[in-house]
Amino acid sequence: MNPAFESLTALAPDALLGLMTAYREDKRAEKFDLGVGVYKDDAGHTPVMSAVAKAEAIILKQQTTKVYEGPRGNPDFCAAIERFVFGDSSHLIEKGRLVSLATPGGCGALYLGVGLMKRLGVKTVWVSRPTWPNHPALIKNTGLAVAEYDYADPETGKVDFEGLMASLSQTQRGDGIIIQGPCHNPTGIDLSVKQWIDLAMLTVERGVIPMLDIAYHGFASGLDADMEGARLFLQIAEDSMVSYSCSKNFGLYRERAGCFLGQAYTARAAQAVMTHVADISRTSYSMPPAHGPAIVATILGNPELRAEWEAELTEMRERMIGLRKSLSDELVARTGSNRLAALASQNGMFSQVPVTPEATVEMRERHGLYLPSSGRMNIAGLRQADIPRIAEILAEYL
Image (cartoon, rainbow, N blue to C red):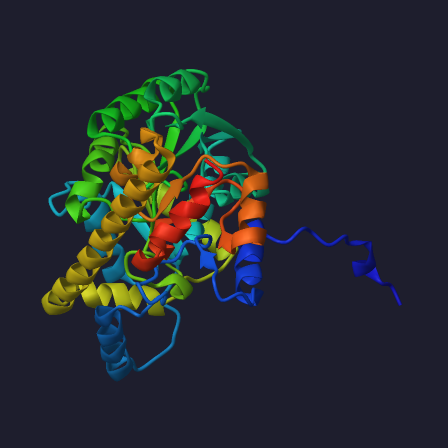
C-alpha cells in the first residue's frame, strides 16, 4: 500500500463559502446574510426568473438530443452576447475580427483569457485594488504574477482615477490587465465614460493586453447605458478580450452560462485567437455547458420573452437602487457622517463598508450579521424591513 494522499495537508476552506455554511448552521432567529453574491427578493429567496422558466419549457419540448455542441457551444447564444457587448451595429462581426465561445460561467471565460495571455508571453496581470478574490487566485493558478492598481477612494466612495492612472504608468509592454465592467465587485464604484476612454488610451499607449470582466450587465442603469463606457474602450483598444457572465442578470447561477469574446485588429489574428482558446478549453473542461446558454439564446431570440426578461431585470435593478438609498440614509442618520452617503450613488449588488476584519467577526458572533472580512456587503441580500436593524449594527463599528 502506498498512501500517497497522506502527504497532503488540508487547505483552509474558502472564506466566503465558509461564511455561507456558518450562516446556514446559525440557529438564531435574528440573523442577516450579506455575504455570498446572489440576488434575493424581499422574502429572502433567489427565484427562477419567469422568462427563464418559460424558456426552459420551450427547450424541454423542442430538444431531441444531448450531443456535444462543439468547442464554441451554442452559436445563437454567442451571437447574442456579441451584440450585448459590442452593440447591434458593430462592424467587427462582418469583418471577421470578433470571436466568441460559450464557457462554464464567467470564470470559465476568465480562465480562457488568462490562459491566452500566458500564450502571448504575459508575465504579470494587473487587477484593481480591491477586486473579486478569484481574479488573483485564477491568475496565480495559471502561473502568472499579480500586480494591483489603485481603484477605489474609501473617503469619497468614488474611483481614485489619479491613483489608478499613476499605478498603471508602472505597467510594462506586454503586461495583462483585468478591468471590471459595470457594478464593480466589491465596491460598486464604476468608471465614468471619460475615464473608460482615458484608460483605453493608456492601455494602447503602454502596450497592455486588456480583458474586461462583465458580470453584472443591466444592474447599474440599463442594458445599453451600462455598456457605453466599455464599448468606447473596446473601440480604442482593438486587441482585447471580454469575459461575460449570465449568472446574475439571468439568475442562472448554477447553470454556468458564460462567454469569452476576443476582438483582434485583423481577421487572420482573430482566427488564430479562436484556435488557441478552443485548444485551452479542450484541455480543461473540453466542451461548454449547453443548458444555460440555450436558455439565454431562447429568451433573446423571442421578442415576448425578451421583453418579459428585461422587465424582470429592471425590477431587480430598481429594487437594489432603492435598498441602497434606504441603507445610505439610515447610516448617515445614525453616524452623523456623510461618508456613507456615497452608497446611494454606487451600482450593482455590492458595496464595501469601512470596517475591520475583527469587526466583521464580532458582528457575526454578537449580532448574527454575516459579512466577509473585507467588509463587502451584498446589497441584493438586504430586505427592506431589516435595514434599520442592520444600519444600527453597522453604525456601532463605523
